[in-house]
Length: 348
Image (tube, rainbow, N blue to C red):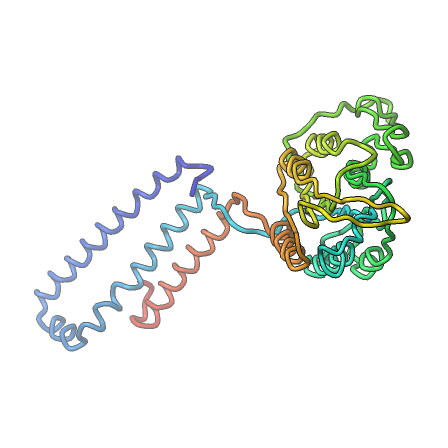
């Protein structure tokens, strides 16, 4: 535990002085009892039970005072608290390779089921958006708190050719930052894509704002979860998209679906081997200060989303606990006074 105002900890020196004062009062009372033998006989009749009762209220009062003095120094503690992230974008792969059956019943169905279970576990105040990407990327559902709308969007996925993982990240970023200069309509392919630097974005304001990158993972209001099973075949370089996310502090959690060795599948007259590009997914997560998860089975995928739900809903951070410390101190002092009045008819 650390303190914002550590200089006030010198006030704790009051405590040993109070202990010495209490011991002096006890000694004084003992001398008085010897001077009046009748008082000594009464105390002996009460027995040891009255002895601990006599000392408990002062002890509670001392502990309460110590808590209040610590609160004055404004303590900080590492606690698990509800996350500040209010928006999550699910970027989900709907390329033809998602029909592979190495994840039962197939990759797409397993991903849909796991994503729906993930949404149901999130707190109601968290908004979720859905991006579907294959050869192109599109916003399937604007960020919303309506779970029914999100489930409908996920159930409406249709398989397409190509895998543009970078486009999925860019559309997710464009949803989170509408003024970032990302032309969603032009994200149909690498050649058609137009992503302007922030200092070149046309704005209605008289003066343009200069974009300043922030630390990766420092943006606490949103996060992106990208689920894919294949290698990028078209569109934006995923590492370029990851750099855009990192510069804005957005974490991109990546989930790899399927087996690393891949599987040969047929789709619209094409035959292809679909392999999981773990190296790129790990690099994307690393660059954005997030994590990579591998899901080789439907059960693995469900566990991944359960883990992500707990990571995103709750975060561990250093928080000031002055109010809690002051509340504990006040409660102890009130308890000390109440016990003293109950047992002895006076306050301490």
